[in-house]
Image 1 (spheres, one colour):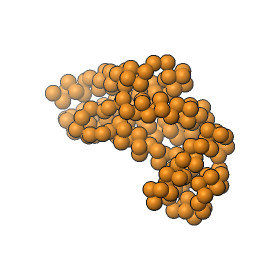
Image 2 (cartoon, rainbow, N blue to C red):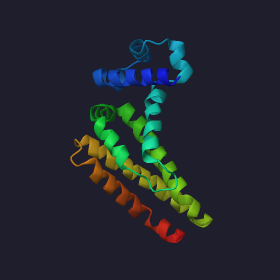
Image 3 (cartoon, one colour):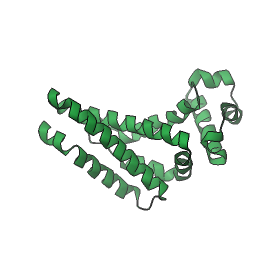
Image 4 (cartoon, rainbow, N blue to C red):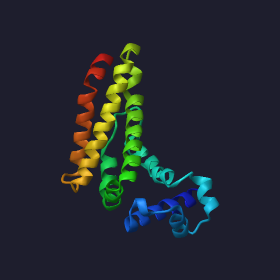
Length: 177
C-alpha cells in the first residue's frame, strides 16, 4: 500500500515538473506509475487528494512533538530541497489554491492543538480568528519566499515564521499564563 502511494506520488511529482500540475491527468499518473485505474481510485478520489498526500509528510515535519512549539526549520528545509517542484505547484492557479488551503488547515490545526487548550472558554472565538490569520500569514510568508526564489536561508525563514506566530498569538499566550 505504501509502495503504491509512493509510486503514484513520485509519478505526479515528475509529471508536474514536465507538464505543470494543470496539464497532468489521472491517466498520465497511472501510466507513469504503471498501476491500474482501479488501484489509483482505491487510494485516492482525484489528483488533488494525491497532491495533498505529501502534506502528511509536511505535517509531520512541522508537528514533530505536540508538546513543543511548532518547528518550522524542517519544513523550510524540505521546501528548499523541493524548490523546483514547489515553484511549479505554486505557479499553477489550481494547485496553488489546493496547496495553500491545505497548508493553512494544517497550520491552524497545529496552532489550535498547541495553544487553545490553555485558554479560557470566552477567549475561544477571538483565538479562532487569530489562529486563522496566523496560518494565512505563515502560508503567505512561505509562498512569497518561494515566489521570490528563496532569497534567504531556511533557517532565517524558520526564525521569521516563529516570530510571526509569536506576535500574532502574543495576547493568547499572556492570557494563558
